[in-house]
Image (tube, rainbow, N blue to C red):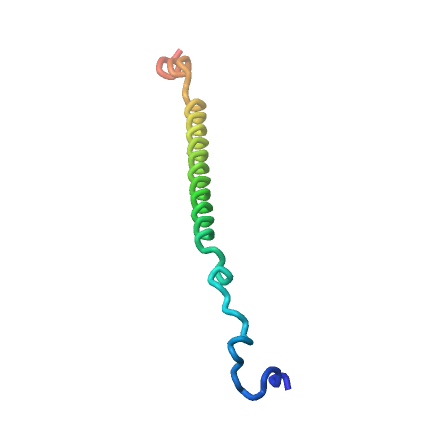
Length: 85
């Protein structure tokens, strides 16, 4: 009973009664615009990625510099370690 919907005589509908064929833009959208958006988004992502890597490298260099300054002995400390008092 559920399958009894629609025409029963197994004939095909004429073309003028069928829905019109959708255009490529209706199916896929504006492909050039989508590709441009994708390229722009990709470039922004790569730019952010390199900026982030640069910030990380600068932070690591700063930490290394602070560590070197912390571990550096003063002249007095070096003199005392070489010549006992």
